[in-house]
Image (cartoon, rainbow, N blue to C red; front, side, top):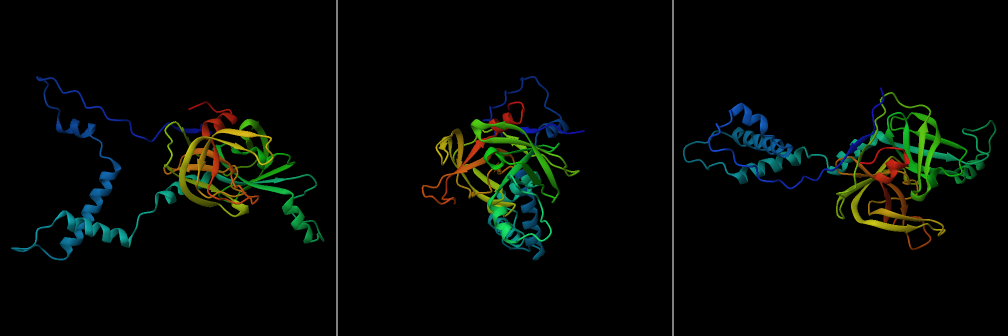
Length: 310
């Protein structure tokens, strides 16, 4: 049975309100009940684990005899640091990429007059022309039936579309939906991996400038590639190079993006998609990244795929 698309409303904790005092004549809760109500945050488990390692390291050095120095918090902190230096934890960006990587696909759009593969006796010089006449981009799986979001400019005018999934599975794909005002296209792959994973999408309602993000894609056809940065601004506007189209309500970010990143996901540190990379700004005529990229908010992108709002 196919799974429904996954959504996450927010990861920012709401401000806590103080609990109401119990009635004066109320009996104290049983220890087991109190334990069930009290959740231990994940950070506490890490701290407890680190402290246990530290204590074990210090005690391994020998028992504390009469007059020995008392174990202090500084001793524990030093032991934890030493343990982490030997086996450092993965970065937040690495964990975010691990979460989104199975859902990222490479998109190839072939123009008129192109046949895939090489005919017998083909001229190698034709390969250069073939490369110039095809569009390379990125997409992200949003439903595990093979529904993929990408940019409209990646696939526009193509007569053949092909996608490559994270596990190497290749498949023809069909254009099944467009949202021209946001440069979005929806593809459906004809063949999908058995264990295809759809990305989890997250509302941008609480996204703020300064939040860390990664951009994942296939810049210049190289990939999958991940770059790391922050949200630089919200509700930005971008006019296309030809001046024929203006995109609005965009997320501005500074994670490196180049041609080929188009259509790829913009991802928060919890591994959830908040936008679809759609454009880069370079005041010169070069199509390379200078630090300003734009992404369509995932709410718009989800609507393009006919999904319910957050």
